[in-house]
Image 1: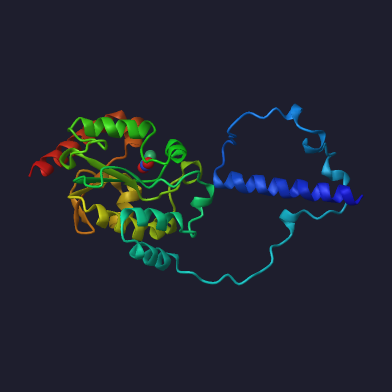
Image 2: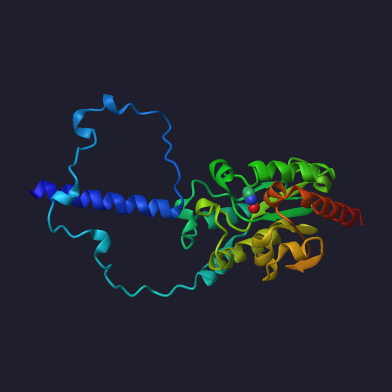
Length: 273
Ligand code: URA
């Protein structure tokens, strides 16, 4: 009987753990190599469990109210500001982000996605957040939207791979961790990353910032509405800011590529002075 109770509790605990992972956006489980479970020793195989309904009166942990504990109030934006301010270089900023424990997205992500490109670039592209491909590779804009982004900038002679600062791009995101299921980052998540973004921009010190989509527009200007804002020069952290529609939007709405092309030409004209 004691064994049955343990098994039933394990079952509920496993279900709760699975559903927690699902909330975090876990969509697949990948091991480095395939495992043939028929080759495993008997003791390590899954225990066959009869339906837990056979165990009467076992309270489900999910239904037990959590103990009420007074959580200490932490001003996470102030923590982020202090952490970003202590970082004395781009490498230190990456380490500060890696050590930042107040963003739940970190727990669901495979990798920290910090940046790619040439830190001496005249143009800094600020994106939204990593997607699945970026989370796997630890680099921004490497999926289909990233390929379009590379093509768009190649059309005006710019590349993240250029060693020449004149033609180089530096690419980063507001969020360094993938949001579950690629949902939009929440305002509080954006707010806690903003001090890191500000410091990141200060280290790269680009001539121009390009905000790709609504999340960077919100992080940099406090307002949304990329379809209205795109193509109109603004200011962020003392730098000229060009909002553009996100390449993922362009993939879904190819007709909008016309406007994106005119934004790229405006950027090129500005850089040519
Ligand atoms: N979209 C973004 O905004 N950033 C990435 O890194 C990838 C897709």
